[in-house]
Amino acid sequence: MKFNSILTTVIVSLIYIFILNVEARSLEEEERIENIKHTITKPRKSSLHSPLPDTKRPPPQFVFPTEFSFTPESILQD
Image 1: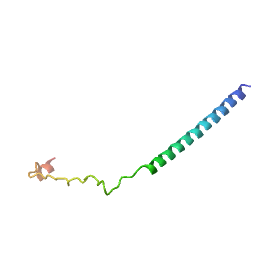
Image 2: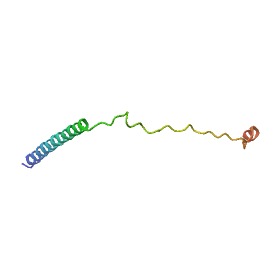
Image 3: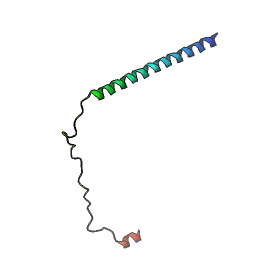
């Protein structure tokens, strides 16, 4: 008798979880539809009237050392 009650509880719990999952999916679907509607009805900004900001960076400035602190002999000694 105890096994039947446990089995019933498990089945009812699985059904409840399934129903909650279906409701969550339908809410996600409604949100996605609302986002699509909002995107469609939102006025677009014209790219001709609003130029992109200047995002180009200047080229990197390389600084070469004029004097080296090592010689080929010091490298060979190490």
